[in-house]
Structure formats: C-alpha cells, structure tokens
Image (cartoon, rainbow, N blue to C red; front, side):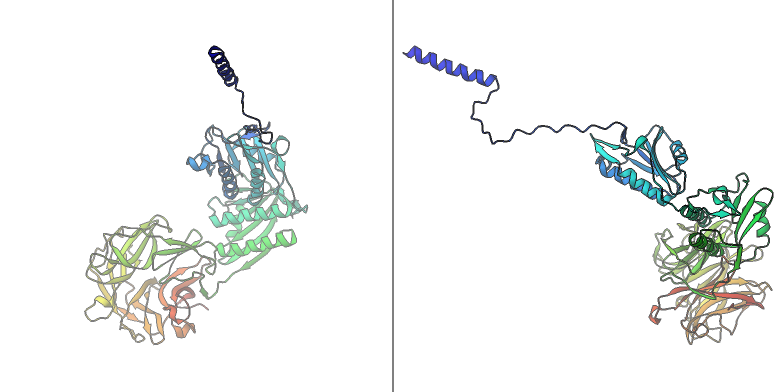
Length: 600
C-alpha cells in the first residue's frame, strides 16, 4: 500500500513538471480578460518621401530677405525631432554664404545653390511658389519673400516624424506644388511689357536705396505677376532698362548733371537701343517721396505714372520722434542719420527725413573702468575716415568730471576710449568737449571749464591744441571767455560749445547759458577768425523761448541735412517739468553776413 502511494505521488509530480515545461497555464481561464499588449507595428517611410535628418541633421540655408521663411521651416523640423534640443547644432540654419558640402540642404529663396536655380525655372510668375525635390536637396522657392512664407507653410504641412526620422512627404506628383493667384493685368512701359525691362541700380547703392529697388520689383510682381530682373550697373547694358539712382549709365549721368538739391524726377526716354526709364533723386528724402508716387500709381492705377518731377523743402522746425534725448549730436553718414546723446546712447534713422522714425541702438560706448557717473553729451566727429567721440564722464579716481576721447570704425560703435582717461586737466571739472580743425589742419579741443571748479564760481570756455591722433592735449588750455560776458545771461553756466566757420572768414561759436526766459543758445565770435583770438558776444540770441514761442532749449550743434538744409540741433525743453520730455528739435538756419539766422 505504501509503495502504491509513493508511485501515485511521483506520477503527479511528473505531470506537473511536464505541464510547466510545455508553457501551459494550469490556472482557470477568464474569458473577460483582455489579451496581453502587443508591440505596435513600426510605420514605414513611404516611397517618394525624403529623409531630412540624414547623418545627424540637415542644413536650412536661405538668401537675403528670406530668413522668415527659412526660420519657419527650421523651427518645425526642430519641433518634430527632440534630438535638436538634446544636441546643440543637430540641425543648422544660416545664410547661403557657406560653401555647399555633402550635408543635406533645404534651400529657401534665391540662394546660390543649384537646387534654387532649378526651382526658379519651374516658377513662371512672381507670385508662384514651388517646393521641389532636386538633385542637391530640396528647394523652397518664390520670387517674392512674402509668398515664400506660404511656400514654407506648405512644406511644413508635408513633414512627419517616422521611425526616428524627420521626413518630407510631397503631396503632389514629383514633389512639386505650384500655386498661383495673381491679377492678370499686364503693366506696360513705353508700350512694352514691364517684364522685358531690367531694374538697374548703382553698385554703391545704400541699404535704403536697394530696399526701394526691391520694393518696385515687388509691387510690379504683385500687380501683374511679372518678374523684373534686378542688377547693378556693373552689368552689361540691356535693351530696356529702368535706371534707379545715380548709376554709371550715360543717361543717368546726363540727368544728375542737371538735378539740384531737393529735386526728383521720373522720366521715360527712347533711343535706337531701346527704352529707358529714369528714376532720379537728389537724396534719401526725395527718393522716399518719388518711390511713394511710383508705388501709389502702380497699386492704384496698374501703371507707371506719366513723366513727373518735383522739389522738396524741409520743415523749418522739426520735433524729432526720438522719445527723449538730452544734448543731441547728429551725424550724417551713408544716407543715414545718427543721433547721440547723454547716457551714451544712439539712434539711427534711415527714412531720409529728420521727421521720420528713429531706431534705438542702445549704449554704443564701451564704458571705461574709471567711469563712475555723468555719461554726458557725446559728440561724434568723422576724422581721417574714422569716428571719434568727445564726451564727459566722472572719474572714480579723481572725483572730477572730465572730457575724454573714444574711437570707432563705424558710427554705430562700440566707441572705445583712446585717451589715457580724461584729456582735460585732472583737477578741473570739464564737460561738453567739441572738435575743431583749423585752416592749418591743427585739431583743437574746445570745452567747458565748469563753474563748479573755478575760483569764483563762474564757468569758462576753454581750448587747447590736440595731438594729430586725437589722443591727448598738446598745449596748456587757454581761456576764451566767461559765462557772464554776454549781456543776455543771468547765470554762471557755459554749456554746449560748437564752432562754425562762415564763408566770409568769421569764426563763430554757438553755446548755451540761461536768459530771463530759460535755457538758450547764443553766439560768440573771434576777432581774428582763429580759436585763440579775442572772443566777443552777439547781443542777438540764435534760440530762446521767446523766439520759439513755446519751449526753451539749448546745447546746440550744427549739421547739414541730406536735403542740403543747414540745421541747428538742440534739446527742448531743458526740463521735462515744462510739459514735454527733453526732445531733439531741429531748426532750419542759414548763414547771413557772417552770422547764423533762422531760415523760415
């Protein structure tokens, strides 16, 4: 009996082992239990798709004016692939200046890549756009930067992330999609389709000038779909040309020989070679006016205007759109206005108009370690093809305000100190330095010996010769005059000096003090036309609240506008408590009988 029991027990154990080895579950089955999770099938990349993240990423390259469209594509690719955030530079975005290599590229706009050239041939009108797979990559192309944004959106809508890769899946045959919705009207010029013309601009065109050339091509394209070639005047002469600005073409030279300051014209001419249109202007202000006339005619009438010409005279008093700036100094360079003021800040105006918009550039000075406070009255002068800033700061070492010289290769800075700290005497409070170059080419610094450090509490105007490199004074300062010399003043202040040489040889200085009606600008003059002459004071003020009729103002300097008008620049009022913030104001002036007067 015992042997039978042992045999049965062994058989039971053997059966259990067999069941386990066969993988069978001996527990009861619940028919309501869902089946175990199974791995989802991996989505395969469809035929005709292009993998973008090849060899650790792809490069998005773009041509000038097409950055917005390229950024849209780059951002979408980076959003789809988390590796772009884990690995810096996994994908790249940049101008087409870098030479093409084996890296996969998406070329956006009119790049120098073969893919863009191929796509250009497939884009017949200005408002078409094409997204195409090319031998050297993918091209996202349009003749219009704005329309290229739509091309970018179309491209992004065809992107997916499949099997760890960003892929482009074209939604039309061959990966090419072309979309058109432009007016059918044709713009004519001299009886010919405008598409047969080339827009020709000067090789040395300013940024603003070239932007207006592109604007005309854009307006023509938007209104007709016509593609107008844009080229500079170093190119071969073509049969039909629209000459923009003072090009090297003979027709332009003939027109500009007769064009006066403040004038503009649009004129159509024809000769045996073909037709030419002349778009001529004397400065950025007249350029802006003429281009507005052209654009309005093309947009509203669908044609170029008839021959037209005009002349512009600027306002006699312009309150600038700079929100607030004390001690403004204006520099005109490359058809651009720059304004510098206390705080060592600067503004830039490319509109051609002093009444136009000013872009803030922020602080344009590399602040010296010794500069503790009082970043006052920066004046910028172009000297020997570089830009020098004469300005004031308070020294942490001496505790005195003094005048120092900074330098920059461009008017936008940064300006870096080139003098060994203050160039003015270390134990003086000195402010508001200006530069004057005399007839012999000798540089002078003229500056204020401030009333806070004179023995009698009366401010002086002082001057000293400078080294040729403008790094230091090379003579002892001389006193030119005192703050209490003129009859019109009632304060001890000498501020804001600026020298001006009249055509009759008179050397005058505008400077600021206070009269009965507030801050103002007076005129002093040298008896021998030289800095070291005997200086006297004119009784008549150049600027005062009484003359202006509203606000006082001062700290003046003189410049010539792009339109050829002489202007006095001041800040007005002198205090925001008077009802307006201290704002740069420009007053038209002219030279008359050895002095300066308002040019109303």
